[in-house]
Image (cartoon, rainbow, N blue to C red; front, side, top):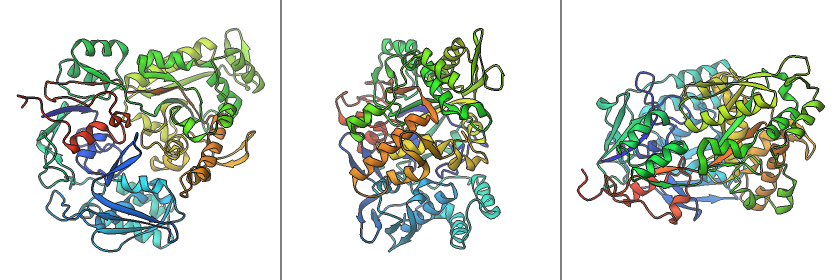
Length: 559
């Protein structure tokens, strides 16, 4: 039996509509869902190669603008029916209901036969490979009716902004199947789901079920504060929570080994530009960046695993040298901690200092509420530290924790002034996916799923570096084509624009402080220099991949 943990909602709020993007699905937003719904493939970040899973082969035809893939023969859903191309088509149409970025790149999807799917691209795109291969396919038996409604809407010229489209989106997000039809080596034990834990039991029909060495996976429920005593009691074998420095020391004393994989993202300070008009002046956001000591923010949040962002390019500092030429890197403003420069920028924007307090251009004392996910110990610490630093600088900021399931919804709806949410991405090393997170996820394009505008940051902007830029178009272009050099040019433009405009202020880049327990229930994990440990834990999670490969095995005598 393997023990892990993450936060989930119990029924009725928690549910089994596992389609990507639907809030509150049980495990739906966490990597453990990959044990229930097997992806088409998983990626090895260090080697830059794919591990085929449900999809056994694929190819791109640049001339025909097609991406064609073939499902493995003999795949079976947990209900005994075969997994076919029809399931894939239903998945893609339902993703369109959820405004998934995949549809920025494709015109249509068709089944060539029961196992082969042909995706026609608007333009050939290297990131489409990631969108398709990493996608979890869902059963037509569950989602086919919704897929047909979506197909009819779009083929008749409708979209999600029409009354019919909005109704479809709302009804789909409210859809609650009683059980999930799954493809992975595990299924939910529906009768044992409690506020404390749930159990995944072996699905003998699932992909690689014969190779996975464990018969059950226990998922303990909770974010960091709740899960910490469970880990300290040695009731978990692996955790990815952001543990405070003091807790990490306790874990080491308890016999845990700490693995520090790169996360390729971290917390950022978000602004509500629709509610706080004075923050629309780019100089104000730049002043905030100079006023905050990002190294301090990372240190107080995660110790060795929190490193202040250097390049402020919108994607991981680890990846910037791979995508930007050295001359372009030199153009990036590092926004060093410099409160004198911050004061100059505020003064240029019409703010003035009265005693120890800053006043906005209309004469009001600068005062903001900052919301953060209450249960995320590292993000909570980051938020409280930002509030403390800015308040000491003369901009009063009051932090408030909001339960982690509600806080991102509040951000999307625009029910905030300042907020802590993610910059960059753990989803894939291509910067395209980081800019989707930075500019779409809690902003106008995707926040519409919650009926709001999120940050309210318009994506057509004027810049000193590049003139007029259409950031939405650039994000799409950053993944188009198969020429990486052309993509580098687009990524460079996005990095320079992000660096100047600062739609959000990245705070620190997170590294895992993941405790693993060896020799108790699990025999051992790979050594620190194993390339698999360079995988992002929140995307192609190395523990999930090790379980699929049969490389994690029970300790001798473990039950």
